Every structure is written in structure tokens, then in C-alpha cells.
Image 1 (tube, protein in one colour):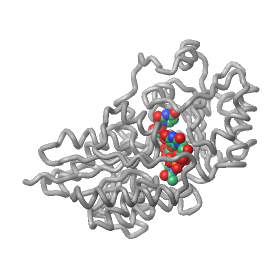
Image 2 (cartoon, protein in one colour):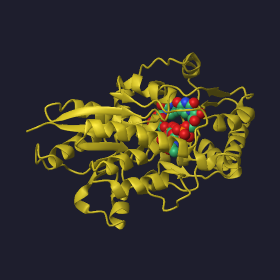
Image 3 (spheres, helix red, strand yellow):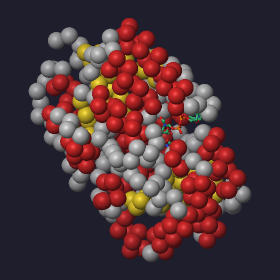
Image 4 (cartoon, helix red, strand yellow):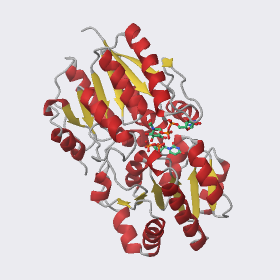
Length: 385
Ligand code: UD1
Ligand code: UDP
């Protein structure tokens, strides 16, 4: 049979981490697929960190990132850049991942060129168009266009069915974020960031923090940082490590509140290897990140989710995460309760990881092979164990 050309579109740190296992798995099936990777480079440094870890060299790089870019400006650059490449490359399918502007506009550019779309991590919904902003709408637009929906969980599948998506086009694969973790965790990891090695050597408790979401900019993020400051003062023997996102809007809030505390370490975004290994050594995670709240449960690390709603209810339902919102007092008191009460902490730490078993990319590629008629293998859905 003639090989099919699969174009994989990536652009930011999270979509690239989660797409990396798909790219690597596709490359194992070169008898069936030609793989073309397009990086929009909506992120630059944070994208390059991921590409380096997974040793992926994009076939095309639109290099669009600008400091303090707007949603409209990146939308315009991405659609023009992708359109040009799609016209010349003529892919048989475009794969996009998640909920970024790269994802949404990647699917739109494919639609304009009448190319089928596969959406990795399909079906995450909050039903609140302002939360997460603009990701909820990015997901809904991508979902309308998508031909093959790779849903990470049954919850995501149900959300798609509620929108009358054809059940024959939905496949529960688990989340490739867990596949990506399995490439990278190493018991004997030496951090490339020296300060992390000295903190790890001390062997004390680590609380890992990340924050960047647009809907949390301003007052909500200030409240969360104030809660972290109070926690750091209350627990001087705990190390708080916060790799601060490169967005200047985030940095303008975080540094003034947290930079002068002896047990708070503010560092630049660390590469994925360092981050994952840091996460595995952490005691507790406070985050508004999507990916991090999926990864924490894989290591049995309780996660406090700094959001008012979540499109990832599974972790909360399984008991590995708590949705604490952005209220300073609520964040502070929930963290204190976990730190001071072993039973509650252990309950969260021992809950089942609902997100994947490390085989999501394999399932996805089998489904693609079936779609294009290379095989007709029955692919079992992912079920959390
Ligand atoms: C984007 C995604 C968000 C995702 C997040 C992951 C959209 C709309 N948002 O948000 O869903 O959760 O990435 O981190 O797609 N910057 C750099 N270097 C980098 C990356 C960012 O300097 O490597 C700075 C730049 O000033 C840039 C700004 O951060 O203009 C914002 O980047 P952008 O991709 O627009 O938004 P994020 O908040 O990163
Ligand atoms: N991550 C990383 N370095 C960091 C912080 C996070 O490699 O300093 C990874 C993390 O393991 C996760 C992903 O980045 O896989 C999450 O990205 P982010 O929080 O930026 O985006 P979101 O998942 O919220 O869209």
C-alpha cells in the first residue's frame, strides 16, 4: 500500500511533550507513514527545551513567537504559515494535540485545505467558555473539525458523545503525557540546574509550584502567591520550588511577592527531564497547569489545582487532586491540612492514576493504521487500573 503522509503540528511546551510519544511511535512505522513535523514555535525557549529532550528536529519551524504576543497575532501568523506548508506538503492527515492556539488553528488550517484531522487529548470540557481561557473554546473548535478523536479518558469520551460526535470516531487511548513520563523518569537523575541537586541532596520535603494560566493573571495569581508566601513562612523547613513561566505577565506578579523568602527557590523553566524528576521527589504540588495535574498522580504526589473549574475532573474524582481555586485563604488552609494530617495526605497519595498506562501512543498509531486500511486490529480502550 502507498504510505500516508502524517503532518504533526506542535508549538508550545505542553503540546510538544504530549505529542513527542506519538512522533516517536509513528517513526517506528515508517513502512506505513511519512512523518512531517511542523513547529509553529508559539513558544521558543520552552519548545526548544522539549525538542532537545526528545531529540526531535521539526521538518518546518515557523518561528512565530514574539514577546508579549497577543492571541490574535499568533492566530494570524500560524494560519498563514501552516496554510502555505499544507498546500505544498498535501498531508493525508494532520494531527494536533490539546488546546493551545497552535492546536485550534492547526485544525482550522487543515480544514480549509480539506485534510482530515486527528485530535490527541480530545473531549476535555468545562462548559465554561471563560475557563480555561481561551483553551475551552480552542478545544470546542478543534472538536468540531476533528475526524478522529483520541480521548484520554472515559469522561472525555462522554463529553464528546454529549456533543453528538459519532461514537465510531472516538477512541479512549489514555493520555500520552504518561507515555512521555516513562521516557524520562530516572531514579539516579542528576539535575542540570545545580540548585536542584543541592535541594534534592538535603532530602527534605519539597513543594513544587507552577502557575501561568491567562484566566489567573492579576488578582487570582497575586492571591495564590500570597498563600505560598504564608506557607513558606509557616513551614521554614520545607523547600518551595517554583520554575517561573517565561511570560512576563506572570513574572511581574511572582517575583515581587516570592523572591525574598529563604525557602522559596524561583528558577527559570527547567527542562522536562529536570522537571519530571523534580516532580517525582516532591511532597506536594500546587499548580494551575493542565499537564502537571495529570503527571502528579503518576508519582503518587497529591496535587492542589489552582483553578476555579477543571476540564480534568478525573484526578479529582479518583482523589489524587483537589480543586482549590484561587482564594488565598482556601489555598493556605487546604495545604496546611494536607501537610499536618498524614491520613488525608496518604489517601491522596495512594489513589489510582486515572490518566494512562504508558501505551497511549501505541494505541493511537494502531488506530491510525486501521483508519488508513493498513490493518484491522482490535484496539482495547485504556482502563485505569
Ligand atoms: C500557552 C497556551 C496555554 C498553555 C501554555 C503552556 C494558548 C492560547 N495558550 O500559554 O494553553 O497552557 O502555553 O505553557 O495557546 N514566552 C517566552 N518564551 C517561551 C514561551 C513563552 O518568552 O518559550 C513568553 C513570551 O513573551 C510570549 C508569552 O510568554 O509572548 C506568552 O506565550 P503564549 O504562548 O502566547 O501564552 P502562554 O501563556 O505561554
Ligand atoms: N514542565 C517542564 N518544565 C517546567 C514546568 C513544567 O518541563 O519548568 C512540563 C510539565 O512536566 C508538563 C508541562 O510542562 O508536562 C506542562 O506545561 P504547562 O504547565 O506550561 O502547560 P499546560 O499543561 O497547563 O497547558
